[in-house]
Length: 171
Picture 1: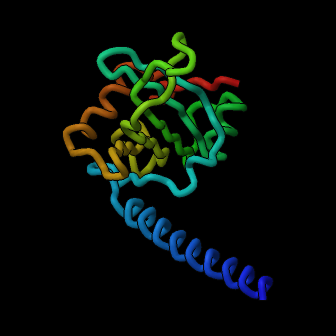
Picture 2: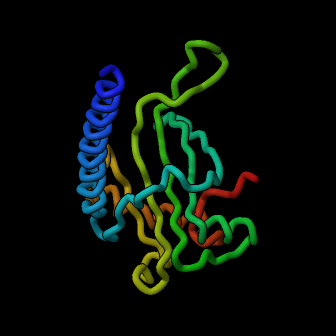
């Protein structure tokens, strides 16, 4: 009898987890449907499992810790020092408010998430913006048009000679 109860409990927990996973996946799918204005870029599925390219520390006024991830196309280009980046390259930057560590005062640690920023290379689709499409997302939702209007201008002014990409590979 005890074994049957244990099996029933495992089945109940499995069903509950499966229902929970379906709900989580449907939320992700809804968020992925929301594309950035101007460029139509979405948050890529599974980007948190991509390889790490480099960290960044943004000073005031943003005061953020950032981590940049890349898909396989991006990682191959970085490793081979390929410029311009090939079509299909996708870069994702995660950003958090920088906080002082409670356990080790000299250290900074991630606080509240601020944005997820995405760059997608498609030289034909995004020809007017150096071959790149941009997406800036706050709480999974695309930022407004005004924020997206500044993306390419900033990249063009500062990193045109590096195919409009700020991040350098940190091996």
